[in-house]
Length: 254
Ligand SMILES: Nc1ncnc2c1ncn2[C@@H]1O[C@H](COP(=O)(O)OP(=O)(O)OP(=O)(O)O)[C@@H](O)[C@H]1O
Image (cartoon, rainbow, N blue to C red; front, side, top):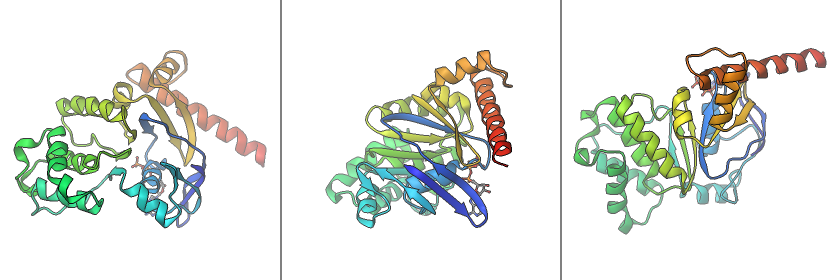
C-alpha cells in the first residue's frame, strides 16, 4: 500500500502510510487509537481510504472488479462481528461461505473443516446464542478461514479466549501463515512473540517500528522501556523512540 490515508471527520486515523506485507504472520501493534482497526478495515475492503492506493493479490482494491476478486480470497474477523444468534454454527459459517461466493458443492465439507479447526466440531449444530463469548470468537475465526484465504485479517482475535485456547490459536496462526499472509491486530505482546514472523507497530496513524519479534525483544534488553518482560519493554521503548523523533520533526518543521 502506498500513501494510505484515512480520516474520520476531523481525526486522521492513518497518515500517508506506506507498508508491504509478504507471506507469514504479521503482528500489528499499537496503543489505543493508533489506527489498527482503520488499517484492517481498509485492507479487508469494508472501508474506503480517503487517499492512497492498496494493491493486494495483484489487484487494485480501489477498482470494483479488483475488490470483488480479492474478496473471494480474503478472510476477515472484525473486532466486533455481527452474527445471527438464531443460526447454528454450521448455518452461519455456510452463510458466510455463500457470501464469499464459494462453490456450493465444496461448502459443506469446507464448513466442517473450518469449524473443526477452531475446535468446535462438537458444537457445530448448536445455536450461536447458546455459546460462550470465547466460542463465539472461534465461530468468527471459522467464518474467516472457511474459504482458505490467501490474505487473512484478524482484529483482536484472542479477545475473550481462555489461556489454553490462546495457545491453540497461536498454533493455528502459525499453520495459516505457512500458506497465507496473515495480519493480526492485538494488544497482547506475548501473542506476537509466540506466533508472528514480523511485527509492525503503528502510533498516531504512522509507522513506528518494524522488525521481527526477536529484534523487538532485543530492543527491550538494551533500550529504556517499561514492562514485565523484554518484548513488552521493547514495545514501549520503540514507541517512546518514535514519539521523540516525531516531536523533533514537529519542532524542526515550525
Ligand atoms: N467512526 C469513527 N468516527 C470518528 N473517529 C473514529 C472512528 N473510527 C475511528 N476513529 C478515530 O480514529 C483513530 C484510530 O482509531 P482505530 O479504531 O483505527 O484505532 P485502533 O488502533 O484500532 O484502536 P484500539 O486499539 O483502541 O482498537 C482514533 O483516534 C479513533 O478515535
